[in-house]
Image (cartoon, rainbow, N blue to C red):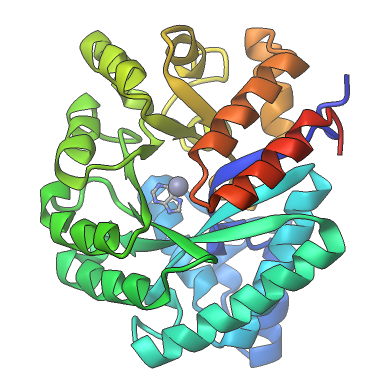
Length: 330
Ligand code: ADE
Ligand code: ZN
């Protein structure tokens, strides 16, 4: 079995968080910016814990300053994803980091990223869709401005809206208005919840934000009634096991709740979150899950069909992805 060549669908990838450290270091050198404090002596990203990770993430992102920089990033990231067999990817894009939520600037960033994605699709056969993402610790007012950017760019490339960042900052109900705006624009909805806070946070995402997908959502496993509800509703969890293990939410893959959640009938999918930060990629995730739970090619193929069904894309694109998944190898 070649897990490397299995065609894959990834639903949960932060564009800036997927930036290879060498790419960020190179951009910093081009611009004469000193961000040496974010790197280990070996050249990886250096951080202590989740909140420090968010700081380092934002420091790395600070060297991305133009639509052209983001276009280069899109091409670099999609090349790496395609090399792992990913045929369809959804990336979180944040207007906060692309011109500070200015509508005119945002339009230019989206145009550049969209063109870069088209080039990557022609070269590597990977399709990208963008999920506009509010940053929770930046607050609800900025999230509403982010939702305006989402309304402005909603279409066949920008297809979703979400929220990431520090889960302990504020309450999800404060972001309901921004999510209502995004829903009215026809965008698919997802929210990071139940990564650091417990089952109640997953319930809040369902109740107040009315999302069809949850980013992580793994702490739902602590509440059997909620697990049953997720299974009954068909809510899709975008699970990133390597991220959770590396950040210390769980001690190992074997102790990760993705196995029990799947057993309980919850629609689970697998993604990398911020791969270079967590020393992972889609092939490593699959290999670690195969070892921890004995999952085989057919299990991963089923997960990918679940992900394709939950993708925020038009039906013609979904049909194209499902067809590619039918072939067992890329
Ligand atoms: N932003 C990037 N990665 C994240 C994560 N794992 N949780 C919340 N926000 C993030
Ligand atoms: Zn995430």
